[in-house]
Image (cartoon, rainbow, N blue to C red; front, side):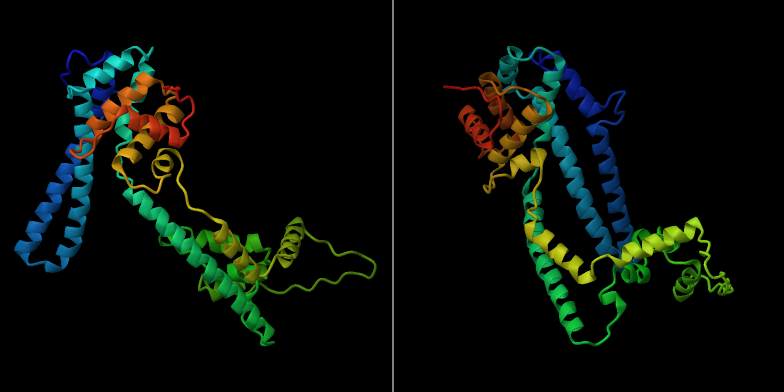
Length: 350
């Protein structure tokens, strides 16, 4: 890849590695983009084939798959194009000149370039997910509290309800694990008897009720213990007795629901790191979000101090990365944004 003469050698090496790959990452972002373009071409070919063969039932799924592939391809293309701008855009000359007086080693150059590129994120999706998570925690709190109250009201009727209304062990005993297409189903069925301290005879009953084999019941053995002697109990029986006693002291299911409701009421969805910094403000602004993310990566991840030359270089670089005709970033924008973010080691520009 060709670079203008003013681009520092460390920047050239880092951008080349990101785009073209190196010994650590054989396929750079350019190769990943090419793979995404081939995948999109394959989907287009399947769509055309389905149309020719009259397989209209396949088209909705393929078109959805294509939309996702286009979004992925466009995102990768934007990443590669951004790296090329950082390498070749003439306005970066001033940014590199400012940083040359600040940076003493390649690690700082790598951190600056990587932060500038990695902070280029569409944060709208993260905002929407946080908003939805906040809505759902409220609904979970309400639903769990309502169910706990209903179970207690049912209990007050004096009618014997299902044990699953109250007993956590019974809920576990009657609930199978069908996640991951039943990957852990048989393992859970065999282990739950150990967890609950069920004796072997009961294990077979549970297995048969779950249609797990239908093995015959083991014979019941009556052992006579002379008066004054203690019955011999195996270590396994002692463990089972201890587990059954422990489960007997467990709270009722309704109490667990109250705990879930309380946890949901107290939970405040949030994101940490670069994303958390970017969306900490309610303001939806590509400029502000980018500068917050950029500053967070520089200071918290790459330990680069926010001196005046660095912040001036950030402003120049932000314009190259954001690359929108209606967005212009100044040094004052950087300084004020980072000050509001509470970035440590922010140099006193006064």
